[in-house]
Amino acid sequence: MTVRLTLISPATSEALREVRFDDDGPLDPAGVARAEALAHAVGPSPRAYASPSRRCRRTAEALGLPAEPVEALAGCAMGRWRGRTLEAVAAAEEAAVAAWLSDPAAAPHGGESLRDLRVRVGAWMDGLRDDTGRVTAVAEPDVIRAATVHALAAPDAMAWRLDVRPLTAVHLTGRAGRWNLRAGEPLGQP
Image 1: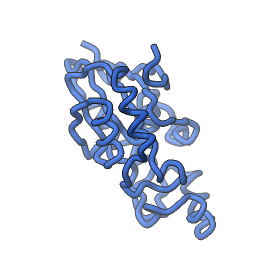
Image 2: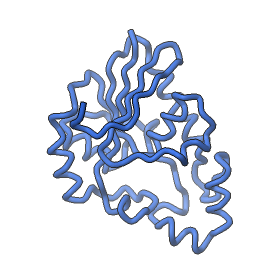
Image 3: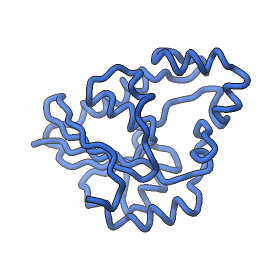
């Protein structure tokens, strides 16, 4: 049997609109309403998971998914940058931001590197047994980028080239460590 993994990005939040490193803030009311309106578009899944963040758990709830929080799907640990805007961090730590954006192994914020995130997410994906069947996970955008890079066996830096919009789905199918990708369709569309 093939694993059919659908990764859904969370609804909008203040942190997302402000381009702020996640501080585990809530969804905004418009994000909740949009997710609730799209609940019909998310098919039933015998296994549903979520990044442990409040916005991913709330998005899963609004979509009607009884999702189990999974630590392996947590967003990248951003250390001392957590809760700050990218603009503020870049103004205060220009060289550190440049290193972070150019070197997937760099973690100048004292948290987790992009490479470490991809390895963690990839290990979770590869741990899904071939007989798992359909799996749905509401995950942070950086987790979805890491999963996509892992699935394609692409260089870690490719994660910076992937846009993940709110409430979109990435579909991965795999067996024996080989993954295929169907990318980025909006929820509610075929």
